[in-house]
Image 1 (tube, rainbow, N blue to C red):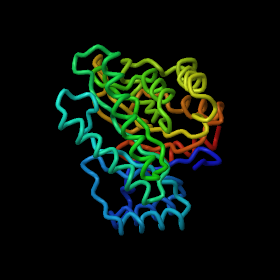
Image 2 (spheres, rainbow, N blue to C red):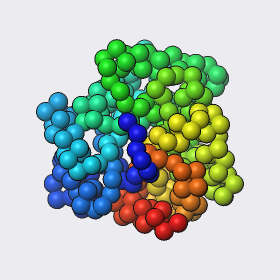
Image 3 (cartoon, rainbow, N blue to C red):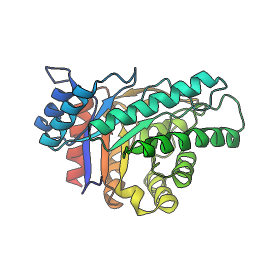
Image 4 (cartoon, rainbow, N blue to C red):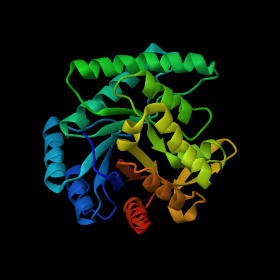
Length: 278
């Protein structure tokens, strides 16, 4: 599934929706003149087949692109087999429900370093992701699998690591969280040249296909020298979101841009308006 342009939307049901169901959330996104919505399964994947099909129909009827965020409780690099297996199941369940909803892409935080050598961690996570992709392929499920760039140095998920995974494994592409990249590096990747380098590295590593099929997270962010602290609204943050939007347009990026700010639809609309102004 490809999009013709960069679409803007919310991480979850818009705050202004009277009915908090995902089906109604899709309809509210359309009323707001936004174009995509992320299904938030961060506390667990709990959506029946019947509801998923209704959400998918609402998305088709309203021309809303759907993505999904897997549970936070995922660590493909755990020393405990039970945790790895549970993590794999959570990612598979996210992909299965997203597929029922006719979703485009799923994302998740892949794991933690746990003080191991980074090459060892990479290989552990790669091995488990290969299992996940193989299982989904055997089930005929076609959604992009997206490990996310993460906001702390203790978490696996530098941009270089996610690009390498995407190069090494079929049907894997990055979920690019610009706020996380900014926080992970304690305030870097905020100038025009640094922001351009993110998109250049993606294009060099993965080709034009990656820029034509992006899954992006954006939010304001507070951070310390150790990385991400919490998300805030864009105007309350030092994140250079206007330059990010400018470079996304310069690079002719397409796909889904999801607002994860506390005021999800407010910042989604702010970014869409700014992007259209450029």
